[in-house]
Amino acid sequence: MAKYLSDFGGPLINRNVFMFKHGEHQHLSQMQKGVLYMNNFGYFIEREKQENKKEIGDKLEATLYIEDVDISVIDEFDKESDPVNVDHITLISNWDKKVPLFCLFTIKSEELLVVEENKIDAYNTRLKLRVELHSTRKQKILSNFKGDVLFIVSPEKFLRQVNKYTEEKNISIAHGDVMYDNFSKVNSDRLMHHFTGNNKRFFWKDNALKHQQEYRIVFPNEYSEGAVEHVIGDMSQYTTYFNLEKLLSGDVPIEFTLRFKGENHEAS
Image 1: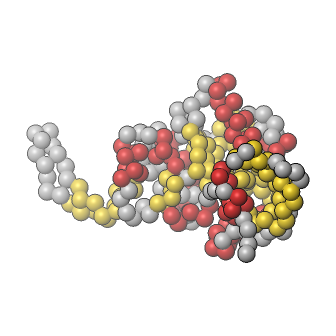
Image 2 (image 1 turned 60 degrees about the horizontal axis):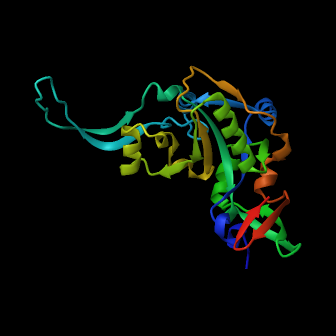
Image 3 (image 1 turned 90 degrees about the horizontal axis):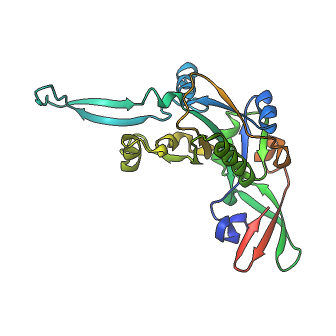
């Protein structure tokens, strides 16, 4: 029976074990040197409109989208008009369009097959892993993205470096996994995040893009008309380049060490 990294349980269940960034080579090279190239939400909204394709572009980014809505208008005398049904409404703040973000793909513990397991001592086990994505996810990614990616071996080190930078620069930050939802249905959480201005409003995407399994970093109090760059420091110690097709096809062997401490374990 096949064994996956998540089968070790505990903190390894549904864990973002690795991350990778696809993009132009010059941007990946700069990223390894510590330069985060961040477009704003407006860029991704316009990109789908221009390309007529939802993948990198997404016209519903940071948007409250509701289908089949009854709308009525209240005038200055508090008189309400008869409701009119509309196919859908789309609401987004012009300020939210200017907020920069940085997007990454994730590989979770459930997607890492254990090929070999060697116990070093009572506290350390060395594993050889290979990526094994669901066929649908793999097909959708490879049909839209080609070439090399910058592979982040330690997301923990990367995020610590990002957090250290934002603390030093006094930059407000929100980061985490994207939440996927059926945008044709009303979701009370998604609705509330938008109406209350909660930063989680930046982390909703339609189920059509669920295969991206995205992790994103958002600077919610920064506003830019175009792309911005933030220099967080060199990342070469925990990043490397891989060919995307080879990586997702399981042709790249990955070594991984589990360190057990009592009932808990760490990974590196």
